[in-house]
Image (cartoon, rainbow, N blue to C red; front, side):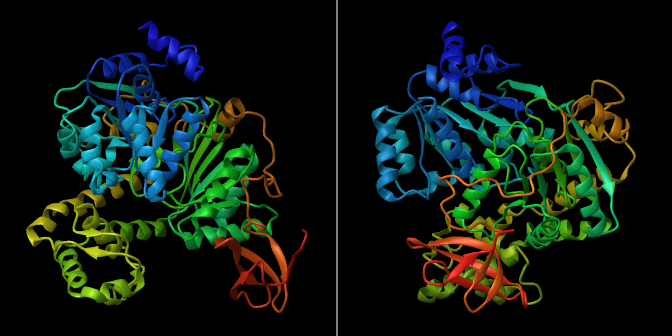
Length: 560
């Protein structure tokens, strides 16, 4: 189609389509549904953005993360393209204004999370507007067998039906044959064609380094970073290990960025912005970081601990080398780390009886419910290990099924108590065993002397072009591959990334300050409080943590 090619060039700045992009765009624009399996960085977004721009009417894009939606919409708006998103972090007036834009036809792409369809009036508003196309990004989330299952994704088939069965494009980089079948079933795609590019990334070198403890891991990490330069991401399963490694790197003169769930929303946003701008930054992160980060020059992805599944692992390493230059992806393996993922697997699979008991308890609290926070609820049910994540899993299930509304500790409401049989349907008996088998496959990847890429291709039911990939530590020498494929090395920055107007906080994590009455302190967290800023600092004299108001407390920066 000439119109598609013209829009590709004039509105997106690309001279030509890549792989099956043109065929997918033509199919979707012509009213066809489909499943798109495309490697991370392969250009999935264009497959629904371009038809939405060229076609008539409204295209809804279901996306899993608010930050991801914001980034994609900002990039489209910067190109002058008619897109917006609606989510819970916007105030009511802003949400209504954006809905009015969609209603008037002023925007052609509307991004939402799957949970948005449970908000009173939203589905009816979409029915009144008339949705011409539906795109489901990260579609593996619809499947109980997917590595990133989101219960609200599983309701999208019903949503599609309610919207009049518009053409639907389901897109993912990581889906086994079983997950592909689930996607087709849940989204009611029937025999719609599957467009695939394969998952091979010849410019990524995959390796596993067995380490006998954290000191060995740190030494290996430093050696790898010196060889690859930056930017780089190091993934951690546990925040405590991330923080410990951050301190060790700081003592060696590095200033890594960090991203994890204990940071404030402003800090997470600031850390991500600094990473995006830098050409040599090191990011220490939990798996929550990376989805939607469009940074083509990542030279290294390191996993400090064993990931839970091969799907999750390959999605994370797929963020490296999107500029088609060489990048190294290494897993630092220690057998004891397996226990961490075993715990996560157990927490993700509470029994139906446990989940039902939590729901009954919440309902029985009545007006006292508003006084209960997450820690209190954990203490009620989890006497031995309050870090156990089963309560978090149950709360997500209750919310996604329409049994609760709001957030615990603030405005949680119990709308209904599910029957035990309903809860059993959410938690099939074989899911725990399936998840444990997925973890076992990850262990085998790390421990067996078999081509890393062959193992991954076999897992996804795809052939590998040759018996030897030539780009993993089993098939070739790592140093030789690095010499041949890595770009010239720049040492990692040993000073903070320069701040800009986007970094509004007066201090950054890792800064040293002298605080009146406390002495020298290291800044561990900075968050907005009203119009001012509060810092959580660690006092050098006794490592005790204090919270200080940066507007009221006297302090001065200690220059390195």
